[in-house]
Image (cartoon, rainbow, N blue to C red; front, side, top):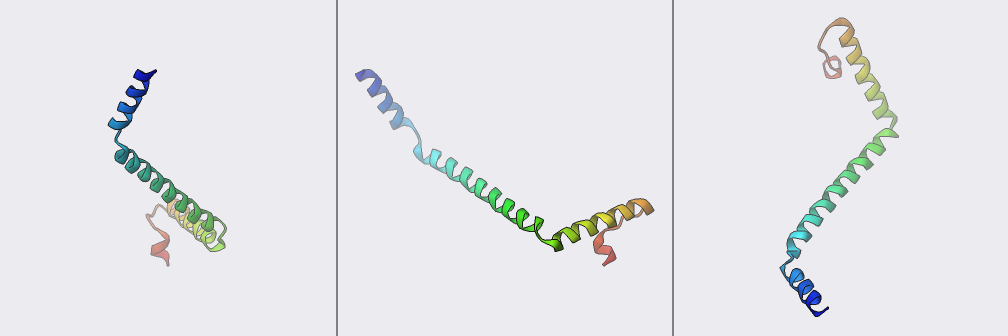
Length: 77
């Protein structure tokens, strides 16, 4: 039992807590960034202007496909 405790204490002393903290901090920042993007997407979904823009862009793209032109909504407006 004493040997096990001594071994565990040695492992803890050799463990790089700063590196683990840095890794966990980076992972947390990435998850928060993903959450922020999801919140922005959620706000766009409920916005009628964003829906109208998406529909307009798709109509323009399909029109371009039908007439064989490479056009975008930016070239029409």
